[in-house]
Image (cartoon, rainbow, N blue to C red; front, side):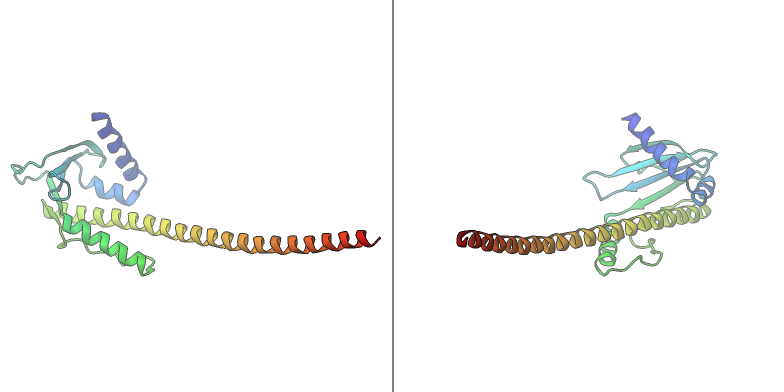
Length: 190
């Protein structure tokens, strides 16, 4: 299981390294612990525990039961994501896709089931990171939705063309059949 955490850590670090804005933000969290708690989404409460190194990249990552004994400290940031928040965000996403909205305005997450605890400066940094990451994810999502719509339209057009082509072939076969009958009738007369 430890190898899995290394893979996840490396994927997250690669995303951080490929995004200059995100890298600058995560450097502000250097030498900080961050715990992301999901208390009611899964059958048992879990927390993702991370530690940012001095370079702003994740050094450590683990998943375990949330430690309610964690006392607030200068190097701890706690993010609590509730089921209400996840459901509300998925409903907003569903509504925007079904209405054909290209991309909603930058969403407001706080006070809707997402809570951040820690130092005020760290909370602002984490807020900016969350907004940036979600905005990037939404951009990718809407780009994928647009591509899927274009693909659907392409296949619909191909199906229509095939059906039209099928009609043309059937019409051609009727003409050929009529011509063959005429040729046979002419052969009988001669």
